[in-house]
Length: 215
Ligand SMILES: NC(=O)c1ccc[n+]([C@@H]2O[C@H](COP(=O)([O-])OP(=O)(O)OC[C@H]3O[C@@H](n4cnc5c(N)ncnc54)[C@H](OP(=O)(O)O)[C@@H]3O)[C@@H](O)[C@H]2O)c1
Image (tube, rainbow, N blue to C red):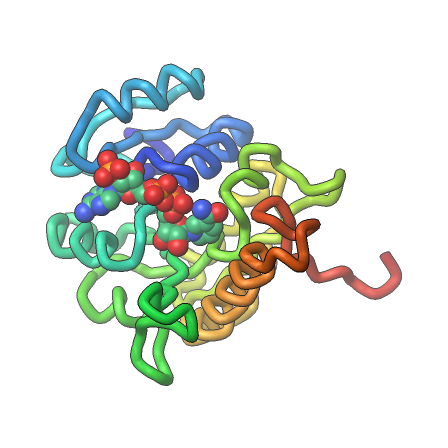
């Protein structure tokens, strides 16, 4: 058993696994189809990381597919009922990369809600507004990272918030799963800011943060 299963071995897998280990969690790390990639990232990370490949039994109560939206649909289809009851963290920003004018999900929905239609897992939106490099670092300019969270299942939302807190981050529960629509637009905005050459200070190493009054 691991505390968390992370699927993928890319940028966000590295960032999320780094935070998990900082929070003294055990990690199962499943590569797409080449176990050597999970072995390599596990060796780089150190700590309690069990490498494997997609198709292995999922041992974490929390599952984080650190993959793009279309592969996330594949993961959901591949694992089917094995995801039932799991806390599924949807980190995707489903940007329509053919135009970069919007998202590739239906109006009035979100990737989180679309994924929820095909799984018995409890889908929680989180981490789509934190860039991978900032998760590795754990802060931006000495400021704690905010993790904006949306979900319908109270226990699942609490589990994700606890996971973020353990890793030194500040969880903010913004509301029910449908608030993922706003979080995905916020993530898209953050991507646009980072991709804007006129704003070099924001390039992929900035953070979206809500500063409380009186702080
Ligand atoms: N990068 C960021 O700062 C950031 C921030 C917030 C949210 N996000 C979201 O996080 C997700 C991952 O982004 P990333 O930057 O980490 O991407 P990435 O570095 O390209 O990593 C993507 C991972 O997905 C794996 N993969 C591809 N197809 C798969 C499949 N069918 N089944 C299982 N795994 C598959 C890839 O494995 P192979 O390479 O071996 O195929 C790779 O390890 C995206 O949804 C993105 O929108 C990213």
